[in-house]
Amino acid sequence: MVVDTVSASTSIIAPHLFDQRSRSPLRPLHRTFHVVACRPLPTAFAGRRLVARGTKQPSPRLADWPVKALAAMGVTKEASPRREYRGIPGDGGDVGDAGVTNPAPSWPPRNRADDPKLQNPLLRQERMGCGWLGVIFEWEGVIVEDDAELERQAWLTLAEEEGKSPPPAFVLRRVEGMKNEQAISEVLCWSRDPSELRRLASRKEEIHSSLRGGSFHQMRNGSREFMSTLSNYKIPIAVATTRPRKVIEEAIESVGARSFFDAVVAAEDVYRGKPDPEMFLYAAQLLSFIPERCIVFGNSNSTVEAAHDARMKCVAVASRHKIYELSAADLVVKQLDELSVVDLKNLTDIESPEFGMEPEPEMEEEEEVSRPSSSVGVDDLFW
Image 1 (cartoon, helix red, strand yellow):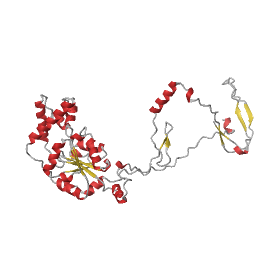
Image 2: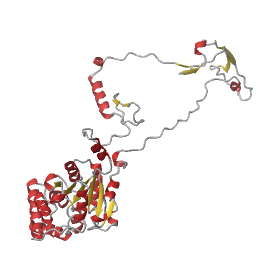
Image 3: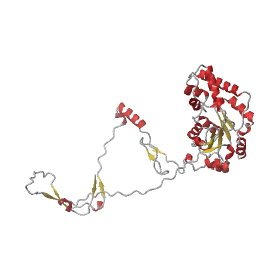
Image 4: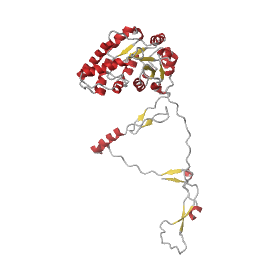
């Protein structure tokens, strides 16, 4: 209860609260007024606001609480986690529901590209600039030509050998980029036994290799020139594919591109293929780069989805799809030599939202809300 104080004595005229006599509409209204004298308050409280507080009751000891009450406290604490800090960054933290003070985040946010362990300030400055980036390539359809008909024939031949119904075209489009075990168990639903999945996946790769025959992979136009440019600028390169390691290593050696790659991620290194971002995250880990500083090059929408889920930029190569079908990517090109290093640096600009560089919150002055006065005027009582 809050009471406005006055500095002088005042007489208050008001109708009595207990005057409940019946009134007749034919008789004039008569009111009974009482004059109440108020003594002046001490000078020390003149013009101030007095707050009436109740007496504090002694809190019971923890040992006196029943066991059920203590259990309820634990459940309530788990159901009400600490509130996320929403205040001004750097103002000293906030107190959550559980009574624990949350640490105040630093402002500006810490740059994840920076490494305080590096003693060379020039290396730290390079890591914090937009020139510190890594590139992750897909193999088929990006570096070498992709034969979609060969992949389709491999699945149809495997289905015929196993006595399964041939998968339709839309199902085969769905399994593009997946691991063989993932496609067999989750999309084709042929088996869920791990040993059987490994057998079918191995047999599918054997059929694919036999259908290819002795023909070697053919590099796409502009791929070698673009990878040479990246090597000249000392930009590390990784290749990520769902092919077995033996197959991808032989393919890299056949085209003479082994010197370009700093890391190779094959089917044995990951549990799931696209659209899961696992293989791209593992490639970034092998390159010792944070995901925000990596650029993925692919040729399908599943690659774009996986790259964005990994907080990476994606450049789509329109080798199999039309350009407008890959509009979800950050850049779309027909060949890799259409790009320059400046384009890659613009994609990994440090002020992009992926780095957590949110704009500083603006301080707005709160409008003072006028509270109704609690003082009573004598003239108001007569109306």
